[in-house]
Image (tube, rainbow, N blue to C red; front, side, top):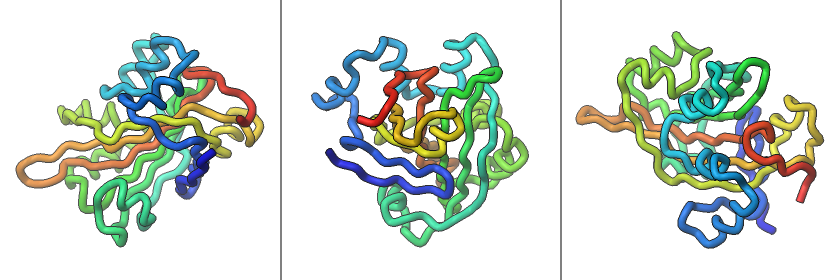
Length: 205
């Protein structure tokens, strides 16, 4: 079993068995037993906020866990394709519908990979999901390096009242929009799915 850490100030993921891209044979085995809509959520390239609202029939809001700035780790910088010395805006949130926690998300945005307009909008709308902020500005985005896996996540476990040995489905990707004048936004996103949304997996495996 391969266990690799993905670190953040609050979000600390132990990835069990590695990340899987959609075409991989390993990804097909990893998806066995999931319902059709759960598979679609794991590898969706659209707006997660919109998809959760369509799925739940409720408005999706943000429960802000932390927001700040820090240096990127070497692994994070390599994933984003930026200088390891780059500073980045970091935000960790729960996406919630009503009282139900659906998705724990961490976003890392290198300071030189975001326009001033988008940065100002995120500062002003820190309680809004990223997808909704971009949509409200008319900014389209794409995703690349989309991969899913099974993780342990202490922060998510504690917030959900589960054992820290619990496992979750998760994914990571790069969200981006680049215009003629440079980056509008480029962000590394890691998302941990609550068992209420995808799964459950339950105890450690």
